[in-house]
Length: 323
Image 1: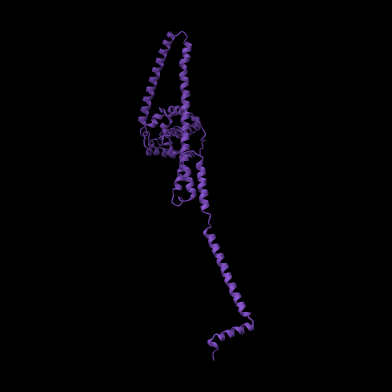
Image 2: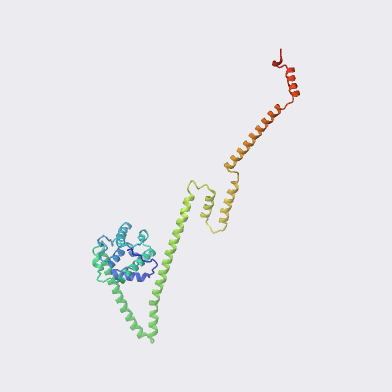
């Protein structure tokens, strides 16, 4: 039975990162770091143990063709599980934050739908060792986590030392504690605002690229040889290549079309041919009528008129009347 997960599922970036790092024991700082597809494969391996051939997964993928191989492994797993999810590999491998965040939101929604998101007795380090570059990733994550823990401990010691100094220096320590706590509250709020702004910028860039591609298709069509000389194409080019936002550009394009229409007002070849044919038929009818009138006139001559004609011929010295 095919599995369908709603795409309209929003999870914050920080929550996504915390979930990935805790599930796979990684130390990702950005969602787009998972663009190689290896993290997605191991997440599927966590919810479906043994379903993913981890020896085919490459955690050291740097080039797009290497990342595509990881997504092929992921797509094979989707096909085996009959998951109807289209993976836009060409966008994910570019490392764009918005595309990777949207797909990772879907991944979390799917993993949460399997056994309530519980992954008992799963050892991500051991499973990752079978993959190419998996050991190196685990070592880097462990080193980063130890460094983070050390810096956290040092910051805690420094903060406690500063607190003692503040207690000795100031009469009212309560106000100082409130002032010190304000930056820790404000920083996450700024992080959320920055994340929202980045998502908004990515969405606007996608919309811009979409409409630019449409305009480019129109331009290519207008530059083709069979359409380049048409008046409508010239008007479209006038609008496309306008360098300002003046409203007169549209009026100029309409004027170009009106001028071309006025020049094209003479009759078409079909109308001219029909007119010539009609005039020819009229002339033929006139010639036939003249011939009929002449014949009728000859046949209706009176005997006296015919005798006069004979005498005229005799007087004229016609060879037929000589003796």
